[in-house]
Amino acid sequence: DELEMENTEVIVNYRPVEDTHWTMGMVVESWTIEALSYIFAGIGLFFLVIGLLVVLVTGRRAIKKASLPIRLLAMSANDVAKGNFKAPLPQLKSRDEIHLLRDSFEKMEQSLSEYTEQLKATTAEKATIESELNIAHTIQMSMLPKTFPPYPERDDIDIYGQVTPAKAVGGDLFDFYIHDEKLFFCIGDVSGKGIPASMFMAVARSLFRNVSAHVSEPHIIAKALNDSMSEGNEMSMFVTMFIGVLDLQTGLLRYCNAGHDAPLLIGQGVGVLPCESNLPIGLMDWEFVPQETTIASGTTIFLYTDGLNEAENSQHQQFGEEQILQLAEEQLVKGECQPMPLIQRMSAAVHFFAGAAEQSDD
Image (cartoon, rainbow, N blue to C red; front, side, top):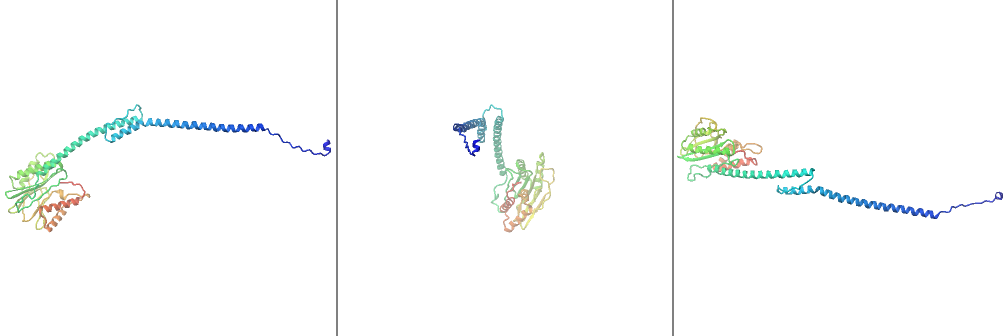
């Protein structure tokens, strides 16, 4: 009351006293918790790394153990690839897909081994067959005339011929010989190719020689060949033939065409020798028509099989008779219609025409 009355002012400045010990204690405790958290985090990270390493090592070992059969199978496969079809395979106790793969490898080895043995046997048989075919080719070619010029002591006649089989052996043939100043000659083409055709061809050539030694009429020779070859011909094979007998003193040509391509006459010009239609030899009983004409001196008789005019190129176009006639005319103009250059020109032309196409006929 007295203070109020005396108008006295009192200012009280209150400042609470800080508890220094309590503040410091709180700071120390905060730093301790943070340090412990770092320590525990480091320990956790350490064990995490250790755990990952353990998992990595264990996983690698497990994968290596699981893939071991695959590696062993791969090694066996390499041996098989090198030709060892008896390479040992790993023994597996498991019954999983790898075991099935191992069994498949074993079956593959057995199959390859059996196939190899069969292939060896087949190759040996093929080599034997090829050897026999080569022998057959040699025998067949030895049956045909191969010495040219055949009569070097004579200046009144020149002969040349060649056969180019489509296979090792073929069915085309030609033959000739001189007897009593008469030239007996023939050309033929057996149906089919290969060994059957070659055997049929050998029979036809032998019969021609045997029959013509006693008979000089071409149509009678053809009749005799037909009677012999059609008998018991269960395979219905046949041979087209042109048979001629040329009198070297008079130039008279007697001939019989048994279903063969008509020959060319190259002399003053180029023409086709007229031929009657007759059946090929070996099909059925047939009366062959005889024909004859006089051949002027210096005339070339060009005989061929259908392997020439029917030769095909890669576009299946045929060489054709027109090209044969054209080439013959060109050779006549050049004055090179003698037998050897004429055949060489025809052979070169047909090979150029056919190109890379496989030869389809003799």
